Each structure stands twice: as C-alpha cells, then as structure tokens.
Length: 572
Image: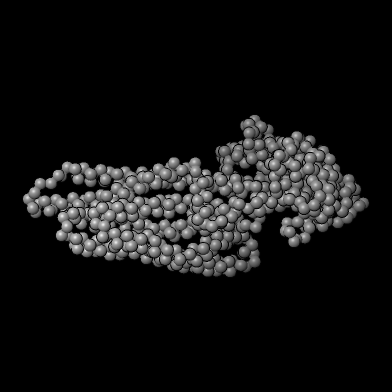
C-alpha cells in the first residue's frame, strides 16, 4: 500500500475524532479567510478614506468600520479556537492511534516482534505515531486553508479584474505546487534515510545505557561513543540540508507574491480608463493577493511534514498488518479448569530453514504432577514453554491441554490456565498494586493481601513509602532481584492457574534471596501441576517428584527424583 492510501486509512482509524478534526479545520478556515478579508477591507477603507478626504466628499464610515471589527474578532477568535480544537483533536487522536496500534501488536508478540530491537519498536509506537498525527495538524489543515485562500483570491479577481488572473493564478500555483514539489524531491532521500538513522541512533543509546557494564568490561566504550557521534553527525547533516530547503521554501512565497502584486498593479493600470476599477479597489486587490500568498506560504513546510508522515505510515501499517504467527480458531473451544499437558511428536523451529529446536518431543504430564525438565542450554526447555503458551506455532505433532488440542483453544484462554514465573521477572513502571493485578485484574484488596502474605512480601510492603501505591520504576529498578521474584509469585497466586511453570526461579540470586524464596515457591506450587525448567536442581528438589531429561529437542530420559539424585541413572 502506498503512503497516500495509508494516510487516508489513518483518517478512518481516527473517525471517532472526526467532529473535533472538522471543527479545527473549520476554525482554521475562518481565521485564515478572516485575516485575508481584514487586510483587503482595511486596505480599501484606508485608500477610500484618503481619496474622500482629498476630494472633500462624504463616505460611509460605519459599515466598513463594523466589518473590519467583525473580521478582526473572527480572526483572533478563530486562531485561538483553532489552536485549542486542532491540538485537542491531535492529542486525542494520538491516544486512540497508540491504543489501536498496541491492540494490533499484542497478537504479534513475541514471535513476530522478536526481530525488532526495543528501540525500533519504541520508535514505531512513539515517533512514527507522532509523525502520523502531525499529518492532520501540519499538513491537512494548512492544505485546506491554502485551497480556500486560493479560491478566495481567484474569485475576487474574477469579479473585479479578470485579466489579473493570468498573472496571479500561475504565481499562486507555483507557490502552492512547484515549490513544494521541488522541496519534496530535494529532501526525500534525506527524510527516508534520516528516519532509519534516528531509529538506529536510539538503539545505540539504549545499548550504551543497558550494556554499559559490558562495554566497560570489554573496553568498547570509546568505540561505541565514536559510533554514536558519527551517526549523530550524519543525522545532523541531513537535518541541516532539510532545514536549508525549508528556509528556501519559506522565502520563495514572499518573492513570488511581490511579483504577483506587480502584475496586478500593471493589469490595473492598463485598465484604469474603465470606471469599474477604482483606485481603492486596486489597493484592496494588492492586499488580498499578499494575504492569499501568506495562506499558501506554509505549504513547503507542510510538504516536508507530509513526507515524514507518509514514511511513518508505511512503517506503522506494515507492522500493524503483519499476520500473527499463531492463527486463532474461528470458534474456540471453551476450556474448563485443565491441569494436564501432553506433547506428542512435536517438532518446532524458529526459522523455516532453521534447525529443529523441538524434534519429535513426546511428554505426558498428568494433573497434579510435579516435573522438573533439565538439560543443557539449547536442549529446547524454554521453547517447550513458549509453544505450550501458544506464542509460537508448531509444525508437526500435537499439544493438548486438559485433553483439548491447543489449536482449538484461544491463546488468551490457554495462558489464563498457565502461570509462569520467568527467569527475568517483568515489572511495569506502575504501582505495586497494578503489577500484582496483572495476574487478576479484578482482584480485591483482601485477595491481594492474602497473596502478598503467602509470597512472604508483607514486610516488604510495610516498608514501602506508599505501600501498594509505590511505583516500582522501569523494569522494577526500585526492587531487588529476590523481591521482584516474590512479586511475580504473588501475581501467580492471584491468577490461581492450575498449571505453574517455573523457569530458572533461583537463577542469578544470592544464597540469602534463594532461601527467602523457597517458602514462597512452595506456597504457589501447592495443589498445582508444576513444570520446573532448570539447568540444575540444587535447592529445588523439594518442589518436584519426577525429572525429565531433554537433549537436542527431545526427551532422553524420565525418572523419579530419587533415582536422578542418587546418580543411578545419569544421562547428562
């Protein structure tokens, strides 16, 4: 789909704000036309008063004075109202557009979004959406005002001095069409490359912040800084070239307007023998042509903004139109409380031509079983969790949950029946209460208190400055690793899912944090089917009864915990 069609599609998405948008356009038109009329009427009035005074004749003072006051009020009120209306529509549209895009992205995660860096994804959600919304404020509104100004000038000229149309219309057409077209052609390459480079620059900054320790450890700080500086210099040069063209575009309308005024005066002087064109009307036409060009003057800048909006639209809609990796059933089967899982001949890989990550996996986990899945890195343990949650599609075999094939179930229903305590807990920059309610949005305060106590977080909550309303920081930066794990455990308790998946629950924690975590893990595992995914079982044997050994994407052995611990049947 081309960029212009994408922009019209954008208007369809923002249809709930169309009345506000139309109101802003109407006020902008009123303000622009009132400003042009004010200049024209004022010029005629001053010239007519001067001529009447010189000739000693009477003139109707009250009607033009009242009209001038009316136009001044309409211009001032229109501009004030236009700013309020257009910016209100813009901000509301931004909120609706981001919500629409987020709803389109949720089904794509994580399979379709894994190739995007976090900085690039953030750019799509923020910068590109901002550019899209600027299309209304900086492109559509100025374009409609310019068209209205052109029609006003052409109409008055056709009525009073038709011969001047041969001068003014080409001049205004050059200002409205040729100049923007030249600027668009000159800035197109820099605009497209600059958008990609800006996204790349954000990624380098994110790497510098999040990977600072690694850069220092490997002595790559200076090299990374030079890469940032070089890319920034390239981006600055591109923006400088674009700014120069914008300056040229801003200056040309004034120059063309002066030429058009000269042409109008020449045409009027040629026809001064005719009584239909009084000298005062000549002054009015001069000011009208000048104000008409002022209404058209923002078009070169609008072209640059429109170019950025078209490229942003291509990026945003290309991402939004990406088909999900997993297709949801048209009529999903309703899943009751299910706690058994079975993998039968499952084969899965991340890339169509890649190696099999799960290769003929057969695994039966009955309800109430407490199974540890162990194996070396790359054995397929984490991939097993991902396909079980219906984040990725399998190519062969079947997975059943509670006896129901996974492909007949809605993904949200599947994930509602599985609580996952990941190796890296995900916490949002929201309050502790909001983070806990991710597991159960309708949880009552009493439910939250019981979950917090079961997860051994009561003392932690009591020590927070604002209790449950304390913000945890981006990614949970205000809490320790052990506290973050227990918050996720409390969330899992609130979710009350029949299947619990523990993915390396003690990885990266010190001995004290691991000891504090054991009691909470026992609480959340009670009465549930448990899958413990880990490299090692040290300190976690009390959570499981059975061990499954994986290697190269398939099950190599399955044994009771006692046999695995005693070393009677080692496979690894």
